[in-house]
Length: 92
Image 1 (spheres, rainbow, N blue to C red):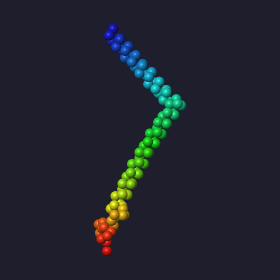
Image 2 (spheres, rainbow, N blue to C red; image 1 turned 180 degrees about the vertical axis):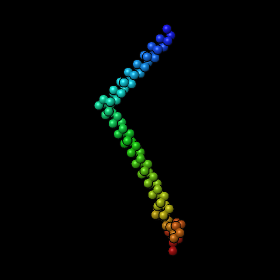
Image 3 (cartoon, rainbow, N blue to C red; image 1 turned 90 degrees about the vertical axis):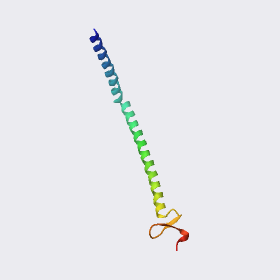
Image 4 (spheres, one colour; image 1 turned 45 degrees about the vertical axis):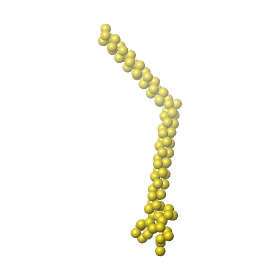
């Protein structure tokens, strides 16, 4: 009796799981479900691209600032022949 009840419960559980998964797949592959998936993918891609562009722009600005500072193009000092920044008032 215990075995039969166990296997009946297992069968009922598997049946419920299959029905729920079947319903999920059915809803996923209807036109409405496909539209929702496409919209979600487009939203995720848009977020990824925005994040990438923001990171790239920040890195470009930071690197430009570093280069301008190293080359003395920031207006505070100019490099001498050896590449060492020299104050503008000390130039000859």
